[in-house]
Length: 86
Image 1 (cartoon, rainbow, N blue to C red):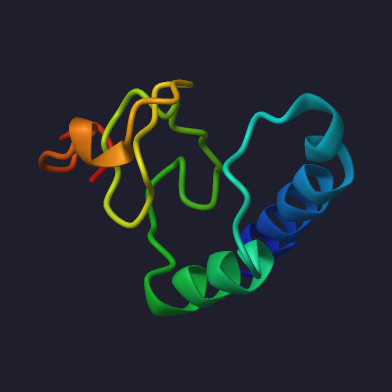
Image 2 (cartoon, one colour; image 1 turned 60 degrees about the horizontal axis):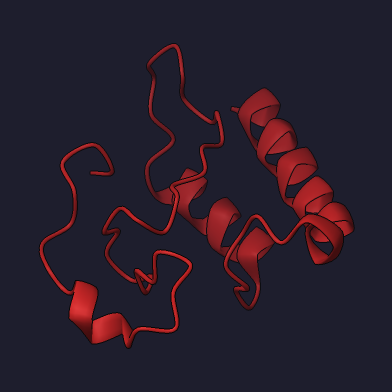
């Protein structure tokens, strides 16, 4: 579990370090805190447990606005969370 937490912490730190330049992630307050809380709540035991993934904003993910890189209002993209996310 410590290895998973360390990996998640390194990933969150790297996102914080680089994302202002690459703008690959949706801005999110306390991303690192959320990641750590999720790991504690459900650490998982699969081979990919703790591996960070990015979900492009053309795919609905609960709790995040789907914008598809567009100026179109986010509610135009409303719908259920994509099965590949959950």
